[in-house]
Image 1 (cartoon, rainbow, N blue to C red):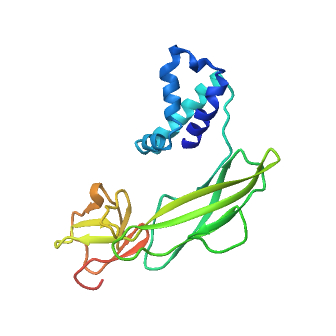
Image 2: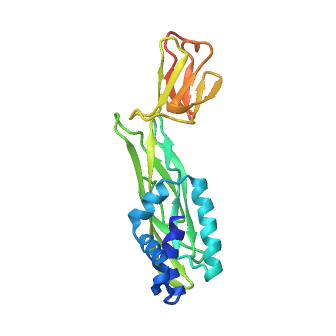
Image 3: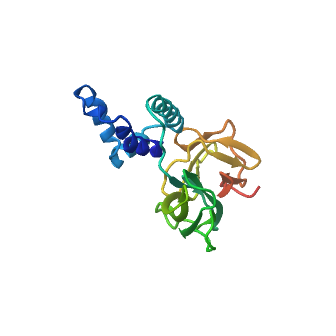
Length: 234
């Protein structure tokens, strides 16, 4: 969506061939001008769900095509989750690049939280567990060597991944479990395994049980060990 808005604000004014200079279209010209401001676009996108952003992108693309040819600037992005859960050991995750408008055969030099390797369109994230109660972040950067219609170019892709270490707080009666990360941020909508039983955390990261959890059974949040129910051994 952000890529589409950047391309739209760059190319549409020229495609309209001076039409935006007419006073009748002052509001439209002002709206396009706002799209050139990164902070404005980021704030707008932050208020949208992925579904809303996808729907709006489809609508804008269709309506742009009614006026002129859709021109998307070459762009590349790192394909990686916004956040991952990490246990006591470092985690590895495959990384790839999503590209628009590039010729085939591009490669990248990867930097940051990745395993060392030769230039490639793929890499492996190497994320270490966050320490203490501070937020954890893995930073990744790819310098992409590519070509666009035969012309060589270099593009930069960057991403950051929130690293969350699981923690589960169990009530004294063992019927209420609060799932969160090392910062105390609730783990909402996450898979919580209580022994062999699987639950989905609700608002605030809460799981409420009809009967107390057996003491000593293991806990896993999103597949990562998160301690045991207090009170003995299974």
